Length: 269
Image 1: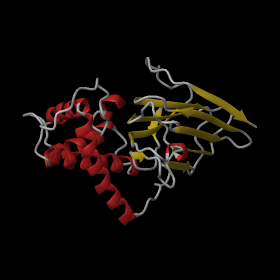
Image 2: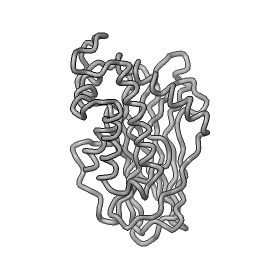
Image 3: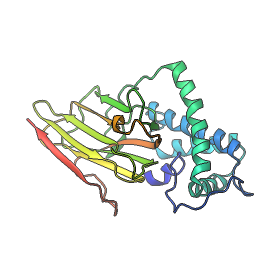
């Protein structure tokens, strides 16, 4: 069900790259229409991330996504088909997405970049605890090229919780000297569990942090960042969206698919 819901977000489908065409065919949302829909879909995901109680079940989330489709007078099938077409025409998609980010960033500046409070600790087997916006961009000359989180729940997370940081990434290229880095840590009192990871290719990426089954988790913190100083003479933009941080109860992490991720784990006492 989680994967089904994610397709309603701004997840860029990583289909094979085709020669792009500036003309949008019939049955596909125009660039202007796509921009408007993507903005509202991002806002919908932000609402879900910040209002945990209201959107605690999949039916409420589904209703919110459907309200976006009704607002723009489109069917879900049209939106899905448009995502596929734009995913195959990356230059057009990236132009549209730049406009989406520009407008969302203007709204964010008006509100301030405030991390949401940690969601109440849930007894559910899995829950998304990501507290910030679900998208970001990484560029070589940005002052702080990334995002940081520090999640401190009102009551400790259960012993042995597993945390999975998921995202979709595109825009990486072979000329880049560095790759986006991920660090995720869990504070279990006298023990800190840390996982370090790098994003090496476009597509969906997960970083998994498993905690000790004998101790509760006081907080979870970390960052996604890109050291762009070695690439300061070149220009690129890396897009990250569909950010989530799933917490799973001990022994409840679902089976992994065929995606393989290289990582290095460490435990500090």
